[in-house]
Amino acid sequence: SCFGVSMQKIRLIREFKFWFVDLLVFLAAFLLSYISCFHFNDSHMVFENYREAIVSMLVFHTLVTLISNPYSSINQRGNIKEMYDVFKHVMFVFLMMIAFIFAVDISDSVSRSVLFAFMIYALIMIYTERIIFKKLLNIYHINSKTYMSVLLVTVPELADSVVSEISN
Image: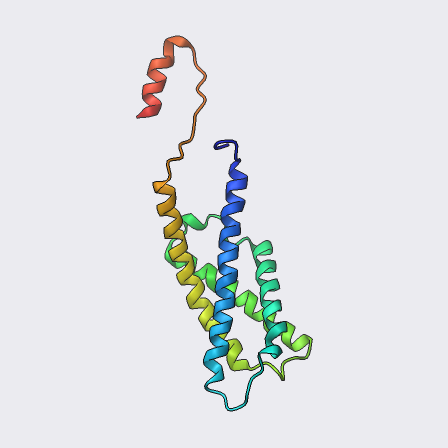
């Protein structure tokens, strides 16, 4: 417990921050893929056709987050492990989106080039976002003046030696 806030609550708040930022990056990657593919395609793609795909992406991102817990020990991961975890997360969301699009029979109104561009943009953008966000959180943690307290129970004769040993 740190200032009355349990470590469980601190972890949940940190994971919620990562989930929310990932959600925003997923939306940005989808919008970027839609805009970039719109210029390369002769037919006019109507954005309303992508509502179900966007909603399914948001739902599947949340579902994958709840099932696989991709943010556990995220601050201790190296860049290669982070790349692997981002790849897994994005691929699960992407494959679930593809399955959903074909299951509800909206595959005719959704461009496959938009979906594949989304996958590539999401991989690059989420990996970059997580690396930057982890660095920012570490800088914030280092610069914050929060200190943990330790309750020390000992006999008076050993108190000075125990305190000097702990402080070293």
